[in-house]
Length: 356
Image (cartoon, rainbow, N blue to C red; front, side, top):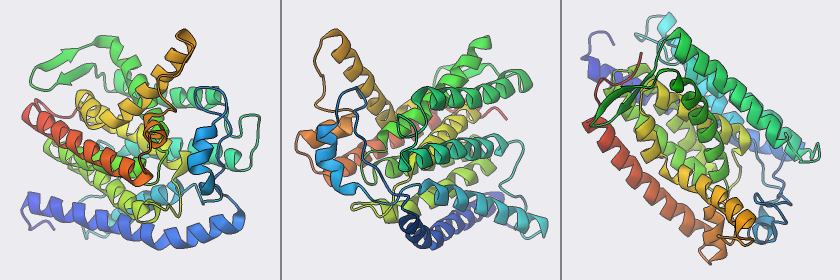
C-alpha cells in the first residue's frame, strides 16, 4: 500500500485488521462454547455479596444464568493475538508496510493484555472448579499480582522512558515528577478492577469496552500513534464478535480473563496517549460502578445501612425493577455520550499528543 496516500492506507489497514479479528473471533466462539460446555467450565453464581453478607437479590435475578459458559475472554485475546501474528506475516512478505507488533507503540499494551489475561484465566478456572475458600484467586493475591504487573509498567515509563508529564486538555502539560510512578499503578489497577466490577450484566461491559476502545482508536490516530490505533480497532473487532454471543440471553461470558485484561490494557493505552483525563471521561460508567461499591461499603461501615439495594449500581437498578436489557441499553447510551464528549475534549485540547 506504499503507493496510496498515507491516511487512506492507514484506514484500509485499520478496517482490514478489525475485520480480521472479528472474523477470527466469530469463527472460534461456537466451537469454544461447545468445548466449555463439554468441559463443564460454566458460570457459578456467587454466594457472597461484594459488600459482605449473602447475595440473595443477586441470585434472585441471575440464578438462571448458572451453567452459562464463561472464559470467553480467551477467544477475544486469541483473536487479537492471532490478528497481530497475521499482520506480522503480511509485513514479512512485504504485503503491508508495518505490522501491529511495534516496539514504539504496542509492545506494552500487548504484553499487558497477555499477562493480565493469564491471571484472569487462573482466576476463572479456580472459580469454576470452586477451588479455595473464596472459589477463585483470593482478592489480595489478585490485587497484588495486578500491582506487580503495574509496577513493571511504571518502572518502564518512569525510568526507561523518563516520562513524568500529564496532559490536561485545553490547559497544558504538567510535570508531576516521580508521582507519575504511583499514578501509573493506580490507573492500571483501577481500570482493570473497574471493568471487572462492571461485567455483571449480559452485554454491559463488552459494549462499554467497545465504545472506549473505539474512542481511543480515534485518539491514538490523531495523536500520531497509528499502529496503536490499529491495535485498539482490532480489540473492537473482537469485542463486537463477543457481543454477538453475549447480548441477552448470553451464550458466553468473558469472565475475569477478558474483563481484567481489557481493563488493564485500556489503562495502559490511556497512559501511552497521555490521555488520563480523557480516560476519566470516556470511562465514566466504569468509575461510577466502582464508586457505587466503595460508597456501599462506606455506608454499611459508618451508617450501618446500605446506600444501594445492591452494588455495583447496575444491580441496584435491577432491584428497582429495571429489566436487564433496559439497564444495558441505557448504560450503553450514557457510555456513548461520554465517549463522544471525551473525543471532543481530547481532540480539541490535544496538545502534543502521545508520549512515544
